[in-house]
Length: 102
Image 1 (tube, rainbow, N blue to C red):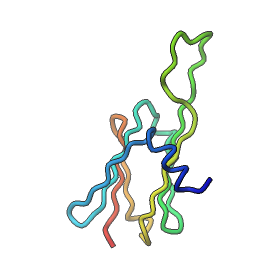
Image 2 (image 1 turned 90 degrees about the vertical axis):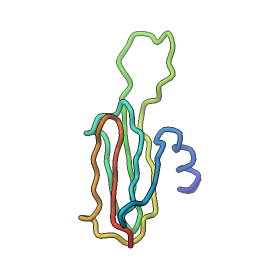
Image 3 (image 1 turned 180 degrees about the horizontal axis):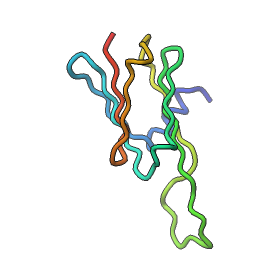
């Protein structure tokens, strides 16, 4: 399985809007229920990777289980950027990432 098919597999867990404004690109990624400390952002070789993890609760028995747990990731090709120009903020279950257009 290549990265492209992995990305499409995980898209449902990290819905992302991408837009441009004022000569910058913006990514707004839904991560409801995730803790800020369990979200990692990495930029390497023109690819921005977002990895998030959420642990399952320790319960005796589920009567109904619809939420997903574990690790999920998304990879975006953003081109050659200066790492210090990539900014991120996590607020109310939404991860905001911005970086200048080339």
